[in-house]
Length: 453
Ligand code: ATP
Ligand code: MG
Image (cartoon, rainbow, N blue to C red; front, side, top):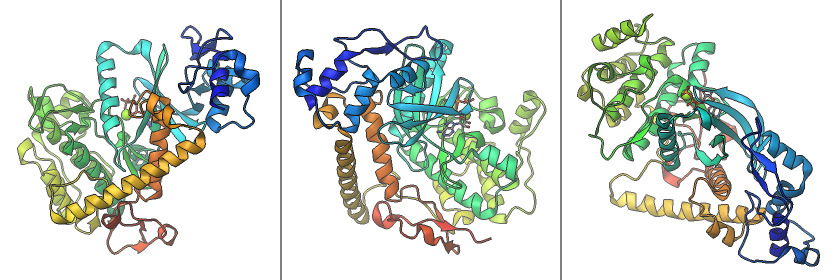
């Protein structure tokens, strides 16, 4: 069966064709080439073996490879850009400064993904640097509240980031359309952002572009922090940075004032602006020009409406301090009065310093990971991936199609264990539909609750 697969892959070469508008692939020759996406094993049978070894039953992977090499419609879809690699591309769902974002489906796993598509001809060296940081930050971030990157696909003219699909829109549109969030929804939303930022700061990644537009939702209230285009990895939290990044209304005063700044404290400030926006539906600092906005932020003058609950007001004031080092630390935010009733989604946070309980939990985590790994390998096998495919294609390589499938299946396994469960505000009523959720990584997780009022 393996021999047959390899042969079929030799028949047509699907290769990149930048000169065709909107297309990534072009069929040029009929024999003796490998498909860009052929996942061959090491057997080396020649085309003459085909008739003898033609398989009766194809695995999904074999079928897909065959279609990509032989099926006219599939090849046409590849040429006109309705397919990219293993993904079937659908309509546009968003756009950014340098990108268009489209909905897509993985042809094997059928999972929905978002394709962030960048036109390489429009990327100068500075943007390319930012892009490679975006990829490297996202590659190392696996947290329930950080948008996942599954794979990176490159053609001569375009770069495609294959991302977890966040179908619930973004926080900015949500507030613009529906108004400020209720106190409980603000708590649940802010707790998730906090959990994501704590996680990335713990591994020295600074986001630098936190704003409501970059807070997406995968469901009505499950937060996914997105857009790591300005992110950077520092050697330690005291590393001074000097590039102005982000959006002016969310920029900390030192970004306007000083030459250098500390990354984590700039993210913390942006979280203060975000929190203000969530609970009031307005921005703390507003002005008609950037110059006036700058002055406003440096002077640090803002007023919190009196109806904002006292504990939340205190948190906002603790964060929006003009002197960076006086700002609330993330751990202080976690322990603040306003968030006291919230049980955080600790499950995927990096391990805290070792203590006996931690050891216990860690061994439980290891068991979970092994179970998860087994589940993923089982699904890969069902799709037709062999151990050899995995070895040959280095599953850790973000540019390998095997990694894409692996990461999608791994995320699916984690979600089935409840990794996307929400934080809980005590005193709310359980949602019976979610009662069946198994706690992800055992003791430390709780199931989703719903708000009554
Ligand atoms: P900018 O720098 O201008 O913010 P960008 O080029 O970095 O933009 P993104 O912010 O990542 O692009 O994405 C642009 C828009 O596309 C988002 O505001 C959002 O509406 C949509 N989008 C991006 N990623 C996803 C996703 N994974 N799921 C659903 N929608 C998405
Ligand atoms: Mg954005």
